[in-house]
Length: 477
Ligand code: UD1
Ligand code: CA
Image (cartoon, rainbow, N blue to C red; front, side, top):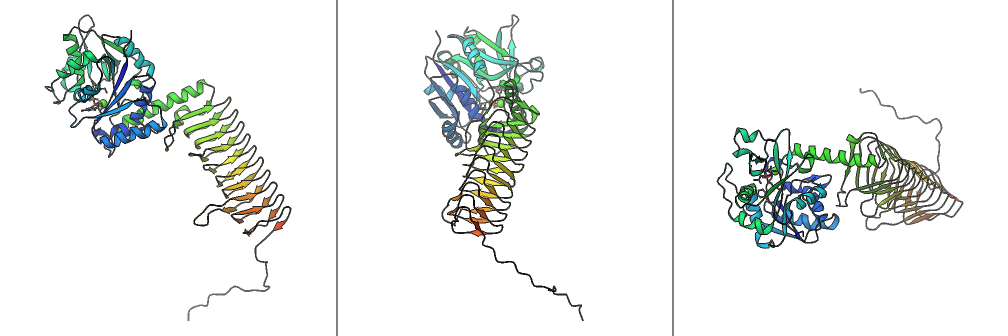
């Protein structure tokens, strides 16, 4: 019979080597705080409770936990306990004892180890069963800095020795402790009470519970995995960057397994949106993604669509067969952005929240579209702005034209009915409607609605002064 699961997450450390004003567990990997990754993994384990141990900048960490729960998966019940001051990992877990039930299995995770998979943790939980201490370990080519797993003559785990306390022979051990263990709480609690800080760092080491377990005759099992990325901790910016790349490469590989063509999996990025929306890229068949693209939040790409190099696409739906040319920026934020089937976008286009583009719409270079619907076949190919506009089918919106949608206090809508041609360099001052089939002459400022099928021009008549001479500079006397 398996015990109910209680998750402990250590997140009180300062993370000195990050050299940051922010707590280490809030540093971001794939756009999500490290702690958010750990909470999301914990959520998959169907735990009865989760206890986060906070300390250094506890308030910001606790606020971040509340924020994270709005967007990303997290265990249903997350409770925080404070560790002040921070006297080591053993001391950290001691702080959770008063709120930790006796009848469960405790799994201890670190807030700075973001990429452990739920299946790995489940295997560790199974290894602990109802009566054992299970350690997640890994063999590293370079074990420097980690606690080493010391085994006896028959291979049984005896204790963990920290790098700073280890002798030469112990430092030569390549099997290291990941910082993750599972153990029945009723066994853990008395061992915690016996910890001392007589060691090189003067800290209460959680890792000392291993020797206590051996003394007590409890079996200690090591669940050794060979995937170092899953147990890698973040202590420095270099380690953070290294893990980011490992994570991105894994996401890229998963997409390629589904058939997505990535020009270079090493130059692909999928991360949470800055507003917290979880990262998800859903691709239909035959999607091609060129170098250097960044996707954030929820993005869907239809069959056969092509994403050009260096596009940044967030919270958006791209229709089948659409072509997004290089350097295009699409961010739907909360409202979302939609690109219709077979549409052509960019290069250098910008689609903002509420951009809804129909079939075969063309948006060219340096065109910005915000909160506007463009019906099938509408085109805005050069240097233009469409904000708060409803644009009908087959409209041609000229180079340099803009909708003046903001009067300084309120936003107003512009309606451009089907088959209108707006000439170059026009200003449509909203609220205004351009009647179907009409034409607006180049350089016009339109402040009143125009009738269907009409030509509207507001510019001054062109005049020519014949034989006119430019002023000439007089030479100085
Ligand atoms: C710890 C292990 C080491 C293991 C390594 C794996 C101990 C004594 N050592 O070492 O065997 O190989 O992790 O990454 O446990 N924390 C607190 N309060 C504290 C101290 C730390 O909450 O007082 C938190 C940190 O925020 C961090 C985690 O515990 O999330 C690990 O602490 P850290 O100082 O990084 O431990 P290591 O020295 O890496
Ligand atoms: Ca660490």
